[in-house]
Amino acid sequence: MSRIIVLVSAATLVVGGSLSLTAQQPNAASVRNEIQQAVRAYVDAINKADAATLVEMYSREAGVTSVGDGQITRGWDAIRSTADSIAGAEGKYKIATGSIDVSPLGAGYALALTSTILTVKSGDQEVQLRGAMTLLFKKMGGEWRIIHDHTSTVAPTSASGGGGATGPAAPAPAPRPTPTERAAAAPQAAAPQPTRTAIAESEAAVVQPGQFLYYPFSIPPSTTCAVTGRIVGLAGGNKDFQALVLDENNFLNWKTSHQAQAYWQSGQVAATNIGVRLSGPATYYLVISNVFSPVTAKTLKVVEKYPADGLTGEPEEQLVAHFADRFKVEAPVLTEGAISVAAEETQVGVSGSFDRDTMGQSPYYVPGMRVTYHIPFTGEATLFKCRPGTSSFNPPRGDVVGNDLQFRYDTDGEVAATKRAFDDELQKVRQFLGWVSNEVTMFNGTLPAKIRAKVVERRGRLERAEAGLQSLGLPVHRTQPATTPKTAPARPTAAPTPPTRPTYDVSLSFAGENRDYVERIAEALRKAGVTVFYDGFETATLWGKNLVDHLADIYQHRSRFVVMFISKPYVEKAFTTHERRHAQARALVLKEEYILPARFDDTEVPGLEPTVAYADLRKLSPEQLVDLILVKLGRKP
Image 1 (spheres, rainbow, N blue to C red):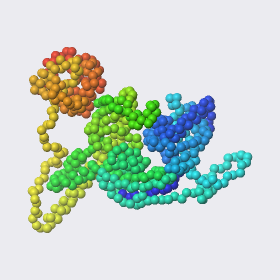
Image 2: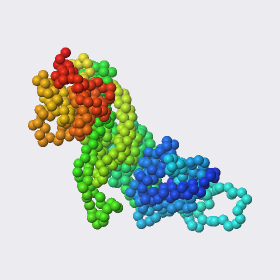
Image 3: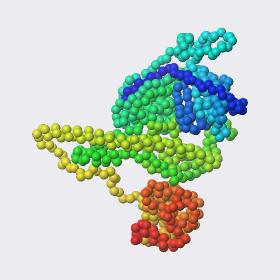
Image 4: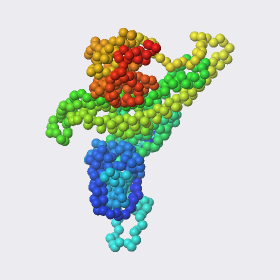
């Protein structure tokens, strides 16, 4: 890949144009006061590095935009990602405003315009940049929301710049000087001389599948730099890669597969232009990553190892279809109908809490609860560790445990208060998996062409070798007789092994209030030779087990059918709810019936469609229900 990346030690700043609207509306004084307060709150949020407050001041309408020194950001999510980058940077930046001019623009709209002084602190030194800021507001739900902002700054100039004589106002506005005229008039001594440092000038390099390259570079104190350049993929698959710029801590987190935030990233691309401004003192890393390609490399490797006689003797289309099916990727899909939650006691750290008297007591803990939300999913869990080409600086943060996605929240308050944070994370997961699914679809779509090219390449090599052997006029020595399978091999399966855990024909899920009835069903099924899960038969097996995990496994993975005995107590109890949700998770992915409802009453069951047929236990005896189950199992005509 060819890389031309240049580090410039002076920021490039672009002065943007501003709007000039002066329409005055009724009640302008009230509007002016409200907008001025909103602007001050906006600036205060920036100075405090309060990203959450800052982003909530923007409208979530589709057309919201933000422009700053030539950079255009579109959409609320993109603005939130940009705002998240200031989190933890309180004191590094400070904005001071001049007078705030407000122009009402009709019903529900207003424009704010103010001059600014941006102070950037780096080490013991400070740099001040003058500029201007325009904010366009829209009144929504009684609150003023920003629908567009535009900020610009100009580099500092010498204090000796000339000023015109003071006199009466001209009869007509003086023409505004062009940028070229302003540059010519500026004192030459004040113009900063840029220093260029090559990071990877015109360097071609190979990024192995599943690996990455990195180029460290340092920025000295009191320096704001622009990293610019271009990276182009020259060969290999789709020639795609991912490029990132990270500071030292985030680089360490990123390469160990922990959560990291990039100052800039390209997404999954075949070519990209770098453009990011960074401040010193700090060490940064330009990373060129190929972590999304290990599956492709594995596919090509297996094709190379495939027996030569099978490769040359089988139809090309069958071989391609076989390998494409074998190595296609299955994107994760959440089983949201089976989401569950648990809580356990823990100690919650509250050091630094402003509403507690914990000064000088660090760490400081109070009794609380750890709330864990569980989301089952299907598909390949490793894809949660991949970074899709489209991504966010604020991705979801959870734990992948097997095929269970877990989110944990520690609280010393109300357990129910964690639901809002979980809902926010769930929305991020849905967005993330949408991006992953798009890339998996693209990857699976390219597999046949990649495999076909490798098959054709190796076939040609083998055929040329065979022709060369024949041309020697000598008998060809073969260690094994050539065999040609009649069909392409099936997807490889593990050798049969004795089952390590039982699988039940039927598992019974019921409330304790209905045990007498259910026990008669269980006894009759066992006498009929049915393997049935009934807790009364499993006393020794269940002794000492973690029932949460064990029952989840039985009702979701180890049963052919689950008979759900529905009653009011059944819907209200915690363990029966746990069993039901895991049974529903399995039913969601099967294309045939799995849950067999049997009703003691008409209690509504969450997640169970009212159109699903059920057995009415108010009309059926235990013996009649047993007969129905045996028919379902194919044990009785």
